[in-house]
Image 1 (spheres, rainbow, N blue to C red):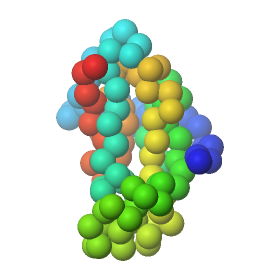
Image 2: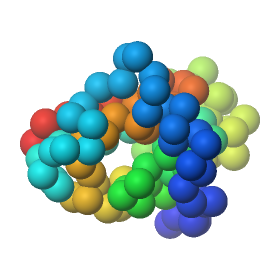
Image 3: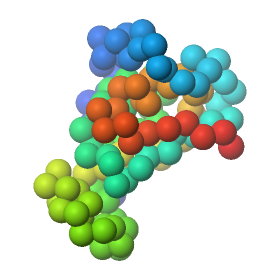
Length: 115
């Protein structure tokens, strides 16, 4: 399903940590209290979330065919143009709500949700 992307890019992570709009609890939340939610209609699978997440929550992989087919035509075209790649959160339980992924995502496709 998913392919491993490059891991933590400390320079990107520091830049995201300094972002004034960074949400969350700055890595102080108990693991599993929050989870990152990826909007597949917006995600282009660039992997910035993977590169800034200190808890290894994200992976980049191909969107499932049934989910892809359920998208509106223009969204499918965009997803196809980006190789049908998207972010997945197989280790969402490790999230500590630092918010780095939210501000690092160039498509603004991630938000933190309280569980």
